[in-house]
Length: 307
Image (cartoon, rainbow, N blue to C red; front, side, top):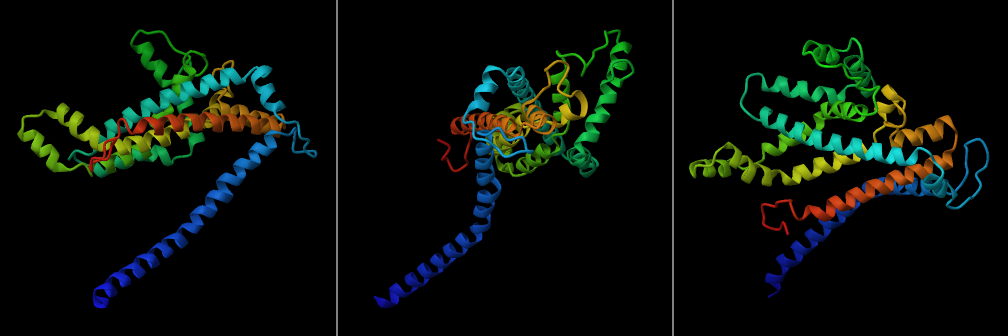
């Protein structure tokens, strides 16, 4: 009996040792979360309850900054609308575009490695330089896009000088920059079991049917990850406003992060800016919670635990 129990005890000691090592290896991650995420977040919340300008000692004023934001601030409503509008357009556009390009790059085509690099390069280029370059394409009189419109006999468009077109125009640039999503989608497509496609093809399924009933279900975990990352990134957008529009025309591109930047580094209202930051965090948290709560209804797990 003791001889039978010895291997079990040995395995138990090995498993406990592995668990101990795993916990030790997780310590840096927990320290990073605490000191780089949670403590700064608490610090932002604390500063938002003061009137700190960065030039004098802060005074505690409670929730006055939040009350002012939603009662007297002339920009907050337009800023929230512009931010959500930009995020929705950018997320939907980048998801469709990146999945479509990944599907093309997953096929056996000549110079496939070259084209993969071409579509990924915009993501690693300096964002400010990219937006300045796109401003030449959007130029109202001699820009490339307006040249094409004039050649087609259509009326020219003030892409970034018209409040109607500025957010969709900036969203188009964000979609073009989605090279990281393409790479992740491409990795996911290469892990879709080939046997599923072969079996469906033998049963007479066409390309669209195989994509809809095999590729998409198998890709739902990747779609969820890209959707979450894209949503977080685009709700914190600031570079387009800083590089091209300065929040204009009017307040149509005064995104929340640009509003925060203006309050903190132009008007030196750091307490007020931190209150705006916490509103951004609340919006991010709300969208993230909704995404996680609804994910179990559409994410497919191959093991059958998708409910």
